[in-house]
Image (cartoon, rainbow, N blue to C red; front, side):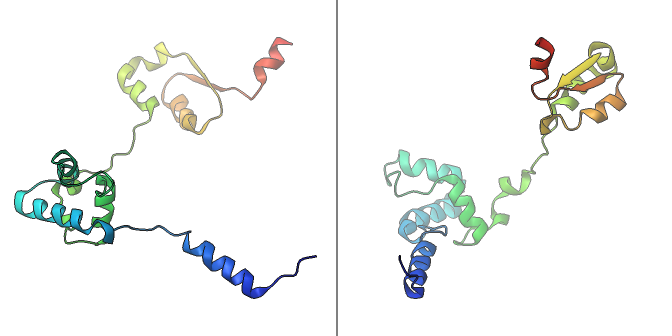
Length: 155
């Protein structure tokens, strides 16, 4: 029977903890980040262009560069001299809420939705959660199928 040793448990915990957090290789990419900062401030390049041109021009290998997503994360974390307010495209873009496909159908068929779609049958997936609102707004009946119902009908 093995005995528990607190010191061995603590060491295992610390070793596992070292590998559990996100590691930023910011310092190992300092030459690339200087390149990005220089071209961003002096030439007006976007972060996307900086990442792409670094590889195309052959100045850096793919392993030496950070992808565009990582560059934007570095900006968000304040790790180098570019700030979010320096990124006009990022400020202009507002995250749009995805319109539901049901609303898109409604707009496409506008007044005639209830005439075109008399009934709608769906499963109980979360993507169909707002169908009950549609039933109230249009003259359409919504039916939710229960799992394995089709098997019971065939018997």
